[in-house]
Amino acid sequence: MFILKGIEQLEKAIAKAKKIRPRVEFDHFGRYRVSGSKGYYTVICRKDERGIKTVACTCKGVEKGLVCYHSAAALSLHIGLAKQRQTA
Ligand SMILES: [Zn+2]
Image 1: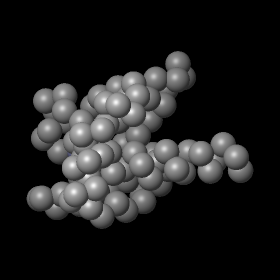
Image 2: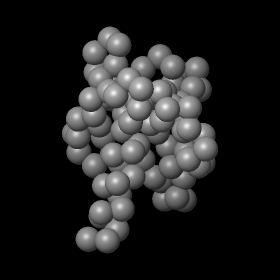
Image 3: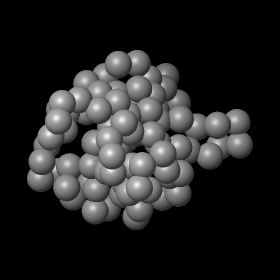
């Protein structure tokens, strides 16, 4: 799990996601399944009561504190949905 501080943090992972183009499946708001090299990973995007955004992925990279491309791919969908909810 990592704390999302800004989009700069995601740049490399976004570039990788654009290259790999994983499938992102919507589970429910804040929860997504992203295809990876060994099947699907679950990505959870959360915002706590203090407004701190965290992203968790079930892959190995995130355990080491890396921002994986699964997270980046899920986040791009999540951010779009979050905007829609705010304006709805
Ligand atoms: Zn991942």
